[in-house]
Length: 137
Image (cartoon, rainbow, N blue to C red; front, side, top):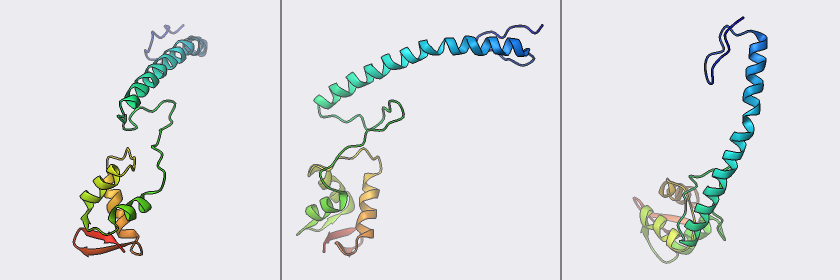
């Protein structure tokens, strides 16, 4: 008879019966893991609520249950860009900061790049005046 695998040990050379028993043991302990996960999720929710009261975003770093909470905006990025650039000429970095100051919420670490792509893509709404400088068309 093969020796019983210790917790987390190798099951190489274990008999079918030993494998079945080990599987059962691990399955029984899954309840403890689920309870621990629920407790941690509750703690994360409480911390997120505190951060929200302070108007600080967690940056989408905490994913509970595989669900990412995305910031909700009243309108899309392009209308925000048009609003910010109307009557003004700005560089991409200035525009990305101005859009966020105007109320656009994002958790993207590459927001400046996203703004740049939007300005390049929507030539009907934005006019490039010189390298890196744009205005609303």
